[in-house]
Amino acid sequence: MHQEALVNSYRDQALAGATGVELIIALYDGAIRFLYRAVQAALEDDVRGRRLAVKKALDILMYLQARLRPDVGGKTAHALGDFYAAMFTMTLEASHRASAEELQEVILCIRNVRDAWTVVARDPEANRVLPRELRTRAEVMPATPTGVSLAQEFADDQSSRSWAV
Image (tube, rainbow, N blue to C red; front, side, top):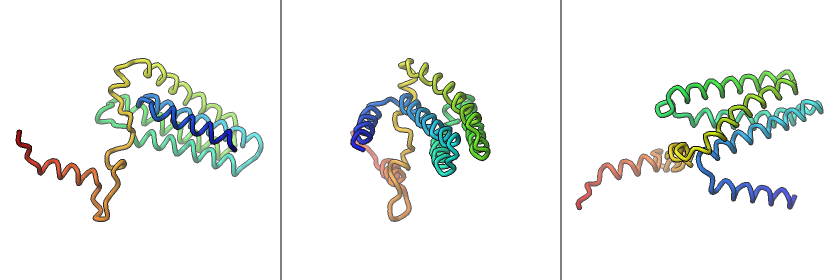
């Protein structure tokens, strides 16, 4: 257990200084890791383990899809959205059939796109364009007891001020 805590601490520290692209790659790595667990569980006829691992991989795919910005990313964002939807469907079908081979096919597809992100990560311009924070301002600043998000309150406050120089 102590070794697992060290690994988690190291991972947290590594992600603390990561760029937006590096965080996306880390999410892909997580999805791949959970899919490998699902493959192992499928081979061992561990239904519960397979379902838990698949759920975590699907959670990551949904998170990635929810963070897409078609208004900014255009056709690329739409293509990634289609990719995430296809991987979601393939993962569900593979899990339903308890097919280690189909899960490995999903891993290969995700790994190919992950490898493309590693190429993007080498481009300094891409690291400036993609935000490090993948959450929206409303997610970072949750709703207040009045039901208005802190982000909205901040925006309203800023827009009502007149700055004199």
